[in-house]
Length: 124
Image 1 (tube, one colour):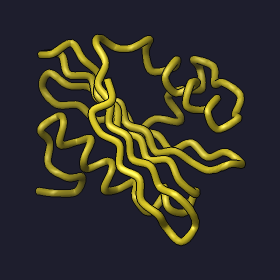
Image 2 (cartoon, rainbow, N blue to C red):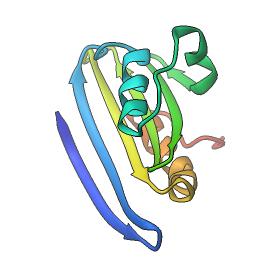
Image 3 (cartoon, one colour):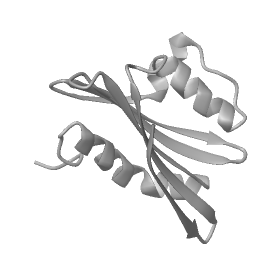
């Protein structure tokens, strides 16, 4: 399930980038976001509030979302990319201090977009 893990040191502490792939939709968006929130010590979201926390993108055969979750112990960027041709969901997560996560979010978003065969955000 875990395809790769990268750990690096930043001046504000460790940075972990994890890439995983699971069969199907892995419980759905709400379950995934709430699992990540729980990892940061946050209460779960309700279904009604989920969409306000996600940024979505799509391509033929793919639907995806990104989110940034901030807790008292750090932050997480997470992207879920569902690939219909494989009936699999890819996840890209960056866990680090909040400022590092925010700084890395654009590059992590572009990496998630590349799974869906999309150019970087803002590219022509």
